[in-house]
Length: 378
Ligand code: MG
Image (tube, rainbow, N blue to C red):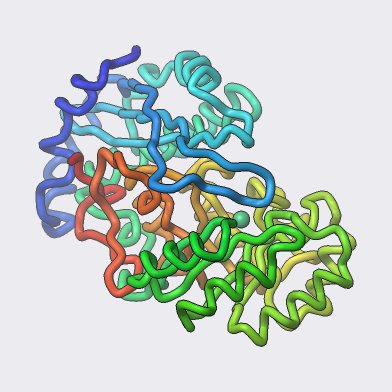
Protein backbone atom coordinates (compact mmCIF):
# COMPACT_ATOMS: atom_id res chain seq x y z
CA UNK A 1 0.00 0.00 0.00
CA UNK A 2 2.72 2.42 0.97
CA UNK A 3 5.27 3.65 -1.58
CA UNK A 4 8.69 5.03 -0.87
CA UNK A 5 9.60 8.56 -1.86
CA UNK A 6 11.54 7.59 -4.98
CA UNK A 7 8.60 5.58 -6.34
CA UNK A 8 6.22 8.38 -5.50
CA UNK A 9 8.23 11.00 -7.34
CA UNK A 10 9.18 8.67 -10.17
CA UNK A 11 5.81 7.44 -11.36
CA UNK A 12 2.80 9.06 -12.88
CA UNK A 13 4.41 12.42 -13.48
CA UNK A 14 4.40 12.29 -17.26
CA UNK A 15 0.65 12.18 -17.64
CA UNK A 16 0.21 14.28 -14.55
CA UNK A 17 -0.25 17.60 -16.23
CA UNK A 18 2.55 18.41 -18.62
CA UNK A 19 0.17 18.21 -21.58
CA UNK A 20 -1.53 21.40 -22.64
CA UNK A 21 -5.33 21.45 -22.66
CA UNK A 22 -7.07 20.04 -25.68
CA UNK A 23 -10.73 20.67 -26.55
CA UNK A 24 -12.99 18.81 -24.14
CA UNK A 25 -14.74 16.53 -26.60
CA UNK A 26 -11.70 15.69 -28.65
CA UNK A 27 -9.96 14.07 -25.69
CA UNK A 28 -12.85 13.04 -23.51
CA UNK A 29 -15.20 11.51 -26.07
CA UNK A 30 -12.57 9.32 -27.67
CA UNK A 31 -11.28 8.03 -24.34
CA UNK A 32 -14.57 7.65 -22.58
CA UNK A 33 -15.80 4.48 -24.28
CA UNK A 34 -12.58 2.73 -23.28
CA UNK A 35 -12.76 4.05 -19.71
CA UNK A 36 -16.30 2.75 -19.31
CA UNK A 37 -15.18 -0.78 -20.14
CA UNK A 38 -12.36 -0.75 -17.59
CA UNK A 39 -12.58 -3.29 -14.81
CA UNK A 40 -9.49 -1.97 -13.05
CA UNK A 41 -9.90 -0.69 -9.51
CA UNK A 42 -8.48 2.57 -8.19
CA UNK A 43 -5.01 2.20 -6.67
CA UNK A 44 -4.39 4.33 -3.59
CA UNK A 45 -0.89 4.90 -2.19
CA UNK A 46 0.48 7.37 0.34
CA UNK A 47 3.71 8.62 1.85
CA UNK A 48 4.44 10.70 4.98
CA UNK A 49 6.30 13.98 4.37
CA UNK A 50 7.45 16.78 6.70
CA UNK A 51 7.06 20.39 5.55
CA UNK A 52 9.85 22.74 6.61
CA UNK A 53 8.60 26.26 7.39
CA UNK A 54 10.75 29.20 6.32
CA UNK A 55 10.03 31.02 9.63
CA UNK A 56 8.85 29.89 13.04
CA UNK A 57 5.07 30.39 12.79
CA UNK A 58 3.29 31.84 15.83
CA UNK A 59 -0.44 32.33 16.32
CA UNK A 60 -2.44 33.12 19.48
CA UNK A 61 -2.21 29.51 20.75
CA UNK A 62 1.14 28.04 19.62
CA UNK A 63 4.41 28.17 17.61
CA UNK A 64 6.01 25.64 15.25
CA UNK A 65 8.72 25.11 12.58
CA UNK A 66 7.44 22.01 10.72
CA UNK A 67 4.08 20.55 9.63
CA UNK A 68 3.45 16.83 8.98
CA UNK A 69 1.65 16.07 5.71
CA UNK A 70 0.68 12.91 3.84
CA UNK A 71 1.23 12.84 0.06
CA UNK A 72 -1.34 10.66 -1.67
CA UNK A 73 -1.77 9.20 -5.16
CA UNK A 74 -4.70 7.52 -6.87
CA UNK A 75 -3.71 5.68 -10.06
CA UNK A 76 -6.08 4.34 -12.71
CA UNK A 77 -5.64 3.36 -16.36
CA UNK A 78 -2.23 5.05 -16.62
CA UNK A 79 -3.41 8.35 -15.07
CA UNK A 80 -2.35 9.62 -11.65
CA UNK A 81 -4.19 12.00 -9.34
CA UNK A 82 -2.30 13.68 -6.51
CA UNK A 83 -3.65 14.63 -3.10
CA UNK A 84 -2.40 15.86 0.25
CA UNK A 85 -3.37 15.84 3.91
CA UNK A 86 -1.86 18.67 5.97
CA UNK A 87 -2.00 17.98 9.69
CA UNK A 88 -0.96 20.81 12.01
CA UNK A 89 -0.73 19.13 15.45
CA UNK A 90 -3.44 21.23 17.13
CA UNK A 91 -6.09 19.70 14.82
CA UNK A 92 -5.51 16.18 16.16
CA UNK A 93 -4.43 14.26 13.03
CA UNK A 94 -0.92 12.86 12.51
CA UNK A 95 1.14 10.62 10.24
CA UNK A 96 -0.06 7.71 12.36
CA UNK A 97 -3.79 8.52 12.25
CA UNK A 98 -3.63 9.20 8.49
CA UNK A 99 -1.70 5.95 7.89
CA UNK A 100 -4.34 4.03 9.84
CA UNK A 101 -7.24 5.69 8.06
CA UNK A 102 -5.86 5.55 4.50
CA UNK A 103 -4.66 1.97 5.10
CA UNK A 104 -8.21 0.96 6.03
CA UNK A 105 -9.69 2.13 2.71
CA UNK A 106 -10.41 -0.26 -0.15
CA UNK A 107 -10.59 1.93 -3.25
CA UNK A 108 -9.80 -1.06 -5.49
CA UNK A 109 -13.51 -1.97 -5.25
CA UNK A 110 -14.28 1.09 -7.43
CA UNK A 111 -13.65 0.66 -11.17
CA UNK A 112 -15.11 3.99 -12.33
CA UNK A 113 -13.46 7.13 -10.87
CA UNK A 114 -16.28 9.29 -12.28
CA UNK A 115 -18.56 7.90 -9.56
CA UNK A 116 -17.14 10.51 -7.24
CA UNK A 117 -20.23 10.77 -5.03
CA UNK A 118 -20.25 7.05 -4.30
CA UNK A 119 -16.49 6.89 -3.69
CA UNK A 120 -16.30 9.97 -1.47
CA UNK A 121 -19.39 8.97 0.52
CA UNK A 122 -17.68 5.62 1.19
CA UNK A 123 -14.52 7.43 2.37
CA UNK A 124 -16.47 9.85 4.57
CA UNK A 125 -18.56 7.11 6.21
CA UNK A 126 -15.58 4.83 6.88
CA UNK A 127 -14.85 6.55 10.21
CA UNK A 128 -15.72 9.88 11.82
CA UNK A 129 -13.06 12.63 11.96
CA UNK A 130 -9.90 12.25 9.83
CA UNK A 131 -10.89 15.36 7.84
CA UNK A 132 -7.42 15.99 6.37
CA UNK A 133 -6.91 12.32 5.45
CA UNK A 134 -10.32 12.34 3.76
CA UNK A 135 -9.38 15.56 1.94
CA UNK A 136 -6.24 13.89 0.58
CA UNK A 137 -8.37 11.21 -1.13
CA UNK A 138 -10.91 13.80 -2.33
CA UNK A 139 -8.16 15.97 -3.87
CA UNK A 140 -6.42 13.02 -5.55
CA UNK A 141 -9.75 11.82 -7.00
CA UNK A 142 -10.60 15.31 -8.33
CA UNK A 143 -7.11 15.54 -9.84
CA UNK A 144 -7.51 12.14 -11.49
CA UNK A 145 -10.99 12.84 -12.90
CA UNK A 146 -9.96 16.30 -14.14
CA UNK A 147 -7.03 14.69 -15.95
CA UNK A 148 -9.29 12.03 -17.47
CA UNK A 149 -11.50 14.86 -18.78
CA UNK A 150 -8.39 16.89 -19.67
CA UNK A 151 -9.90 19.93 -17.94
CA UNK A 152 -9.09 21.93 -14.81
CA UNK A 153 -11.77 21.93 -12.11
CA UNK A 154 -12.46 25.66 -12.35
CA UNK A 155 -13.64 24.98 -15.93
CA UNK A 156 -15.62 21.87 -15.02
CA UNK A 157 -17.43 23.97 -12.38
CA UNK A 158 -17.91 26.79 -14.88
CA UNK A 159 -15.85 29.48 -13.14
CA UNK A 160 -13.92 32.26 -14.90
CA UNK A 161 -10.23 32.17 -14.00
CA UNK A 162 -9.83 35.95 -14.35
CA UNK A 163 -12.16 36.37 -11.33
CA UNK A 164 -9.62 34.99 -8.85
CA UNK A 165 -8.90 37.29 -5.88
CA UNK A 166 -5.59 38.49 -4.48
CA UNK A 167 -4.28 36.26 -1.73
CA UNK A 168 -3.36 37.51 1.68
CA UNK A 169 0.09 36.69 3.02
CA UNK A 170 0.21 35.89 6.74
CA UNK A 171 2.34 37.80 9.23
CA UNK A 172 2.64 35.82 12.49
CA UNK A 173 2.91 37.39 15.94
CA UNK A 174 6.45 38.58 16.62
CA UNK A 175 8.61 41.43 17.91
CA UNK A 176 8.28 44.68 15.91
CA UNK A 177 11.71 44.43 14.25
CA UNK A 178 10.98 40.87 13.07
CA UNK A 179 7.53 41.99 11.84
CA UNK A 180 9.18 44.84 9.88
CA UNK A 181 11.44 42.34 8.10
CA UNK A 182 8.58 39.93 7.34
CA UNK A 183 6.40 42.72 5.94
CA UNK A 184 9.28 43.93 3.74
CA UNK A 185 9.68 40.36 2.43
CA UNK A 186 5.93 40.30 1.73
CA UNK A 187 6.15 43.30 -0.62
CA UNK A 188 4.78 41.31 -3.64
CA UNK A 189 1.45 40.70 -1.84
CA UNK A 190 -1.41 43.17 -2.17
CA UNK A 191 -3.11 42.23 1.11
CA UNK A 192 -1.73 40.94 4.42
CA UNK A 193 -3.30 38.84 7.16
CA UNK A 194 -2.02 39.92 10.57
CA UNK A 195 -2.18 37.45 13.44
CA UNK A 196 -2.83 39.03 16.85
CA UNK A 197 -3.37 37.90 20.43
CA UNK A 198 -5.09 39.69 23.31
CA UNK A 199 -2.65 42.52 24.11
CA UNK A 200 -0.52 42.49 20.92
CA UNK A 201 -3.13 44.11 18.64
CA UNK A 202 -1.78 47.66 18.45
CA UNK A 203 1.86 46.60 18.49
CA UNK A 204 1.30 44.23 15.55
CA UNK A 205 -0.80 46.60 13.42
CA UNK A 206 1.50 49.57 14.06
CA UNK A 207 4.58 47.48 13.18
CA UNK A 208 2.93 46.41 9.89
CA UNK A 209 1.65 49.91 9.11
CA UNK A 210 5.12 51.43 9.59
CA UNK A 211 6.18 49.46 6.48
CA UNK A 212 3.12 49.17 4.19
CA UNK A 213 -0.25 50.71 3.40
CA UNK A 214 -1.82 47.63 1.69
CA UNK A 215 -5.26 46.48 2.96
CA UNK A 216 -5.09 44.20 6.00
CA UNK A 217 -7.24 41.57 7.61
CA UNK A 218 -6.81 40.51 11.22
CA UNK A 219 -6.99 36.94 12.52
CA UNK A 220 -7.58 36.85 16.27
CA UNK A 221 -7.75 33.04 16.44
CA UNK A 222 -10.36 33.29 19.27
CA UNK A 223 -8.04 35.50 21.34
CA UNK A 224 -10.56 37.94 22.85
CA UNK A 225 -12.73 37.13 25.86
CA UNK A 226 -14.29 40.61 26.39
CA UNK A 227 -16.66 41.54 23.55
CA UNK A 228 -16.70 45.26 24.38
CA UNK A 229 -12.91 45.41 24.21
CA UNK A 230 -13.00 43.41 20.94
CA UNK A 231 -15.49 45.89 19.45
CA UNK A 232 -13.39 48.91 20.43
CA UNK A 233 -10.35 47.26 18.88
CA UNK A 234 -12.27 46.49 15.67
CA UNK A 235 -13.25 50.19 15.36
CA UNK A 236 -9.57 51.07 15.71
CA UNK A 237 -8.66 48.42 13.11
CA UNK A 238 -11.07 50.02 10.65
CA UNK A 239 -9.19 53.33 10.96
CA UNK A 240 -6.00 51.37 10.21
CA UNK A 241 -7.30 50.00 6.89
CA UNK A 242 -8.35 46.55 8.10
CA UNK A 243 -11.12 45.12 5.90
CA UNK A 244 -12.35 42.15 7.95
CA UNK A 245 -11.68 40.26 11.20
CA UNK A 246 -11.44 36.50 11.54
CA UNK A 247 -12.65 34.52 14.56
CA UNK A 248 -12.55 37.25 17.22
CA UNK A 249 -13.84 35.18 20.15
CA UNK A 250 -14.07 31.54 21.25
CA UNK A 251 -15.53 29.15 18.68
CA UNK A 252 -18.25 27.95 21.09
CA UNK A 253 -19.20 31.47 22.15
CA UNK A 254 -22.08 31.96 19.70
CA UNK A 255 -23.75 34.85 21.55
CA UNK A 256 -20.71 37.11 21.88
CA UNK A 257 -19.65 36.51 18.27
CA UNK A 258 -23.22 37.25 17.14
CA UNK A 259 -23.25 40.47 19.19
CA UNK A 260 -19.93 41.53 17.69
CA UNK A 261 -21.15 40.78 14.15
CA UNK A 262 -24.25 42.89 14.77
CA UNK A 263 -22.26 45.84 16.10
CA UNK A 264 -19.00 45.60 14.17
CA UNK A 265 -18.13 48.13 11.44
CA UNK A 266 -16.18 45.31 9.70
CA UNK A 267 -17.28 41.85 8.49
CA UNK A 268 -16.65 39.08 11.05
CA UNK A 269 -15.53 35.79 9.51
CA UNK A 270 -15.85 32.37 11.17
CA UNK A 271 -12.85 30.05 11.04
CA UNK A 272 -12.41 27.83 14.11
CA UNK A 273 -16.22 27.92 14.66
CA UNK A 274 -16.79 26.08 11.40
CA UNK A 275 -15.63 22.79 9.98
CA UNK A 276 -18.08 21.13 7.64
CA UNK A 277 -21.12 21.77 5.49
CA UNK A 278 -23.54 21.19 8.36
CA UNK A 279 -21.93 24.02 10.37
CA UNK A 280 -22.64 26.75 7.80
CA UNK A 281 -26.34 27.07 8.57
CA UNK A 282 -25.71 26.73 12.33
CA UNK A 283 -23.31 29.67 12.53
CA UNK A 284 -24.91 31.85 9.86
CA UNK A 285 -26.58 34.09 12.47
CA UNK A 286 -23.37 34.78 14.36
CA UNK A 287 -20.92 35.68 11.57
CA UNK A 288 -20.98 37.62 8.32
CA UNK A 289 -18.67 35.23 6.49
CA UNK A 290 -16.95 31.85 6.49
CA UNK A 291 -13.34 30.81 6.03
CA UNK A 292 -13.52 27.44 4.28
CA UNK A 293 -10.48 25.13 4.38
CA UNK A 294 -10.16 21.85 2.48
CA UNK A 295 -8.30 20.16 5.34
CA UNK A 296 -11.14 20.81 7.78
CA UNK A 297 -14.11 20.09 5.50
CA UNK A 298 -12.82 16.86 3.82
CA UNK A 299 -11.91 18.40 0.49
CA UNK A 300 -13.04 20.04 -2.75
CA UNK A 301 -16.45 18.36 -3.00
CA UNK A 302 -17.67 19.63 0.35
CA UNK A 303 -15.85 22.99 0.11
CA UNK A 304 -17.69 23.67 -3.15
CA UNK A 305 -21.02 23.03 -1.42
CA UNK A 306 -20.12 25.12 1.63
CA UNK A 307 -19.17 28.13 -0.48
CA UNK A 308 -22.33 27.91 -2.56
CA UNK A 309 -24.51 27.51 0.56
CA UNK A 310 -22.85 30.42 2.38
CA UNK A 311 -23.28 32.64 -0.69
CA UNK A 312 -26.95 31.70 -0.90
CA UNK A 313 -27.31 32.73 2.76
CA UNK A 314 -25.87 36.15 1.90
CA UNK A 315 -22.57 35.52 3.66
CA UNK A 316 -19.09 36.55 2.56
CA UNK A 317 -16.92 33.61 1.53
CA UNK A 318 -13.24 33.06 1.95
CA UNK A 319 -10.85 30.20 1.19
CA UNK A 320 -8.12 29.48 3.71
CA UNK A 321 -5.44 26.85 4.12
CA UNK A 322 -2.95 25.22 6.45
CA UNK A 323 0.76 25.12 5.70
CA UNK A 324 0.48 22.88 2.65
CA UNK A 325 2.35 22.04 -0.53
CA UNK A 326 1.22 23.44 -3.88
CA UNK A 327 -0.97 20.32 -4.15
CA UNK A 328 -3.46 21.34 -1.44
CA UNK A 329 -3.23 25.03 -2.32
CA UNK A 330 -3.84 24.47 -6.05
CA UNK A 331 -6.82 22.26 -5.24
CA UNK A 332 -8.38 25.03 -3.12
CA UNK A 333 -7.48 27.64 -5.74
CA UNK A 334 -9.77 25.92 -8.27
CA UNK A 335 -12.64 27.38 -6.18
CA UNK A 336 -11.11 30.82 -5.78
CA UNK A 337 -12.94 32.57 -8.68
CA UNK A 338 -16.11 32.62 -6.53
CA UNK A 339 -14.71 33.88 -3.21
CA UNK A 340 -14.50 37.38 -1.74
CA UNK A 341 -11.11 36.76 -0.15
CA UNK A 342 -8.40 34.13 -0.35
CA UNK A 343 -5.75 33.22 2.15
CA UNK A 344 -3.86 30.72 0.03
CA UNK A 345 -0.30 31.35 1.12
CA UNK A 346 0.44 27.97 2.79
CA UNK A 347 2.86 26.84 0.06
CA UNK A 348 4.69 30.18 0.17
CA UNK A 349 5.61 29.59 3.82
CA UNK A 350 7.54 26.33 3.18
CA UNK A 351 11.00 25.62 1.78
CA UNK A 352 10.53 22.04 0.46
CA UNK A 353 7.47 22.10 -1.84
CA UNK A 354 7.54 18.98 -4.08
CA UNK A 355 4.97 20.45 -6.51
CA UNK A 356 4.48 23.46 -8.75
CA UNK A 357 0.95 24.71 -9.30
CA UNK A 358 -1.03 27.87 -8.72
CA UNK A 359 1.11 31.02 -8.79
CA UNK A 360 0.74 34.46 -7.30
CA UNK A 361 1.17 37.11 -10.01
CA UNK A 362 0.93 40.75 -8.86
CA UNK A 363 -0.55 39.42 -5.64
CA UNK A 364 -3.39 37.65 -7.47
CA UNK A 365 -4.14 33.90 -7.41
CA UNK A 366 -3.28 32.75 -10.95
CA UNK A 367 -4.60 29.38 -12.08
CA UNK A 368 -2.45 27.31 -14.44
CA UNK A 369 -4.06 25.98 -17.64
CA UNK A 370 -3.49 22.37 -16.66
CA UNK A 371 -6.07 19.64 -16.09
CA UNK A 372 -7.22 18.38 -12.70
CA UNK A 373 -5.94 20.56 -9.86
CA UNK A 374 -3.24 22.02 -12.10
CA UNK A 375 -0.01 20.73 -10.55
CA UNK A 376 3.22 19.24 -11.81
CA UNK A 377 5.96 17.57 -9.79
CA UNK A 378 9.21 19.44 -9.33
MG1 MG B 1 -7.95 31.74 10.90
